[in-house]
Length: 539
Image (cartoon, rainbow, N blue to C red; front, top):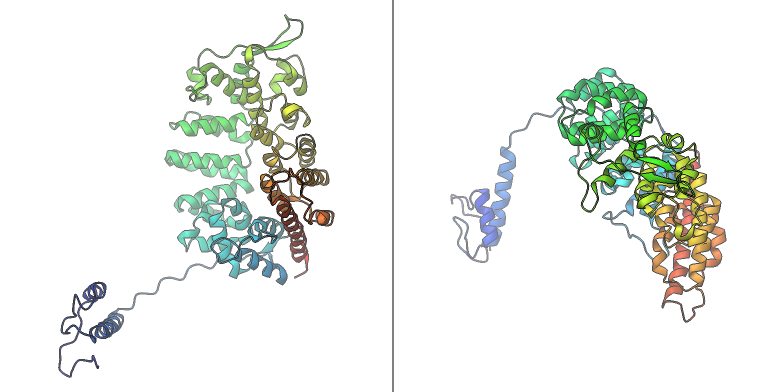
């Protein structure tokens, strides 16, 4: 049946809104104007919609063309070797939501290898292929831990794209610290600082600060009085990059800021400068609370915590109200000791070394509070000597050093040591205590793991396998091993890829799991070796 109206008949249909209504309700319930219900009604509706669509398009007035965006800054770095570019495309295609198959059985987890691939590519100075930038930015959007390396690799084109796509605006807030993110002309820097979006200004300040700490500080000083409190806090936090003695005058002024959070951040930064006036004031308060008592058979540390938190202490960053469950005096004491320079204690406590200080007994149950404050001070001041003293020996009973009271604190203290010292201490810890508590500690060790640490992890996994341990308890460590073991260890692991004999104490299915896990580990290590070789190949 032909639904075309007869010549001279009024047009069938109506406004676009009316056509949509008819489509939603159905032509049986809501006929078209000028059209009777029936089998031809749906066809007539589609014809009318086609005519209305064409009319709307034909009647649209052309808009004025928008100005072309400025071209992206050039990226002078070398292009990737072809094999490495193909590898990057494979790694990005495996990310969640990109249609990749994900992890299957003994196959490597490609998305977990992307951070390492990016680190290698950045170390060797390659530029990202332009076609990979959208997928790379999408991957970084979904994983904040990936952003610094991804943006450093993406270079100036990523920032250019981020200004055009709201979903990628995080790139403007997450400066890679590279010079590519920094405008070359000083006038352009001043203009962006004065007129840019908040995210762009944070990225700019971080980039300027990384290149010239004094210039970054002066940029902030120029507009400090007119910034909002929440913005001042974020800008002030940027001064952690390149923090130096020249920042003290500005930070001292910030101690009088009307925002408590700004005052607290300024005090924290000043206490990280052992030579600052604030550090000296906090030291004077702290040493008045702690002394060596020689009246007994053996010397011990005596503690007299503060009895009040006065206005001067508050100005220097001491928070007067403790958290729920904490006593006021112990709360104030911890903040004073944490902010005092660690060099203070050698002189105050009889010229003793850090090891000798932390070995002294502490009277009246104050040891936990005092040692915990020294742990925080060692982390804040990046003091490896005090960190070693507070960690103690890795073979200590229950892995408890004289001052480290938790795995989290030990991990933070380890981060202040050299890469070799970290690996040695954690290897000793695993050799004594096994892997059950080692996950956090392994996470702060340099990659690839040094030979002794890698061997300690392999030996501990082998022992757990032979003991018939519940295998899924070690999945986290196995995942770390895939990313952190030296690829050269693959050959030594071949003997562990077979299914072990099961005993009565073995968990059901554990043998198959262990075999599959070691197969995946060997395959991943070999893939990492191939990735490195592809990035080494000449373009």
